[in-house]
Figure 1 (tube, rainbow, N blue to C red):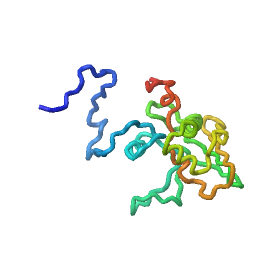
Figure 2 (cartoon, helix red, strand yellow):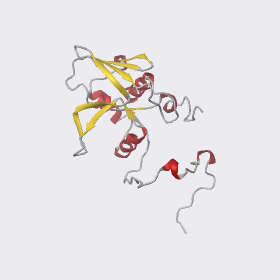
Figure 3 (cartoon, rainbow, N blue to C red):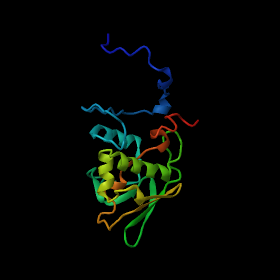
Figure 4 (cartoon, rainbow, N blue to C red):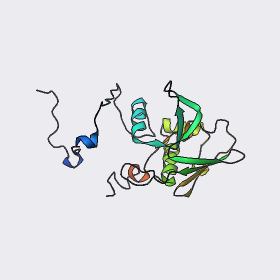
Length: 190
């Protein structure tokens, strides 16, 4: 008999649905064990555990190419993620990101420039630990530097020329403003 007994009053609405083998796939499974108990799964308030989980649950504007021979990120090679392309002004102070119009959150809602703005804003204003550090490292210190051009275009104005344009500030996790902000309460739009 197991020492663990599940609570009887568990909410049935959140019980996962059984998946058929074709939905799950076949082959090996990865079980991630970590010695840290997560206090939150908030991607902007990360710890070692949450950072690893966030990589599976959230995406970034850009990331670094992974060297296939070593598995190590090559920080000299920036590759697209949510931003399919970007423009850099001649003075390197204005970066304009063009989001992938096909990018979706888990519930099928589109990833928009408003979500990117909100993700940076909450890290800056809320002083959210690692998320704030990542963003400020690249010279983004105030929300006045951010601008939503349209649903798929986001712009950052740096106050000065900053040598490594693509440091960690654009590898932060973009969260769904409506879900994380409590506007949809995590419920699917369907």
